Length: 303
Image 1 (cartoon, one colour):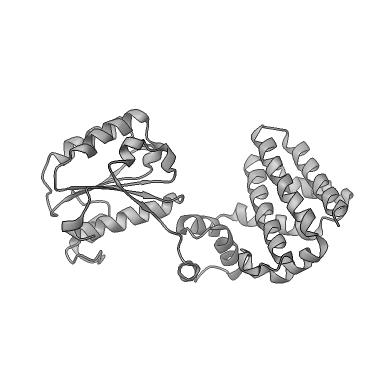
Image 2 (spheres, rainbow, N blue to C red):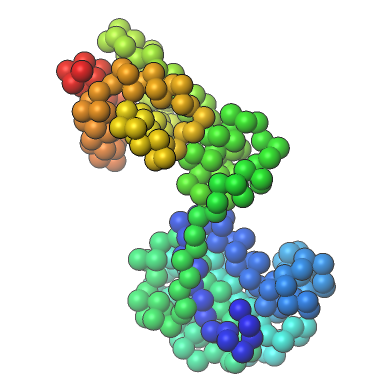
């Protein structure tokens, strides 16, 4: 972004909050960098990285952007930049702000001083006021290439890396979170064991315990089951380019020989139905038992 082509307000849209925060910080460096390159070594970049640059302010100060934050921004932008040529106001998670806070921010964005640039981000564009959307330049943040993520995870165990890349959906924050989330990794191994070895109704109590530990575990396991069984379906249809779990070729081929495409399609529909039941606060034990019984029933009826 060259200075003479700068808009005064940008909104970066990405479902990954961590990616948004990294991006807004890097762009802030680019805007104030002495070398115009986000060099990470000049005094401006160093101060931005340390969250101590007087002309780069990051909000919200608490969990969600509030009216008080907007008030601080208004007061601050009336003062000329101290070190840089302009002031950069970063507002992360704009979609979590109250309507009152967004409306106050709208008035600030409408008529800002010329030496101020606003960098807003959100994970859900629908929760940002349309009046704000009409006054910012929206930038959709793309997923990262898998090769880039692999380089970032180069020191991570190969199995953990494969799982993280599969479920990270191309976003840095989500990928890193999974790579460090022991509970998710355990759930993944448990659900892989389930789809590989659930063959009889007398196994249901044992596998049910893996699902119904708590609500977070159940929700995570449903997501993992959906992903694994979708990959089995893609494998059975010879659509290998659409398979996410690249590390499970042998297992997926085995499962594709055990499940018909019809059964997989019906089980995936079942999982979506059980997500709705889960959201309705049905007893977890009953839910897990019934889900596993239904999976077995569909598997054998649709052979």
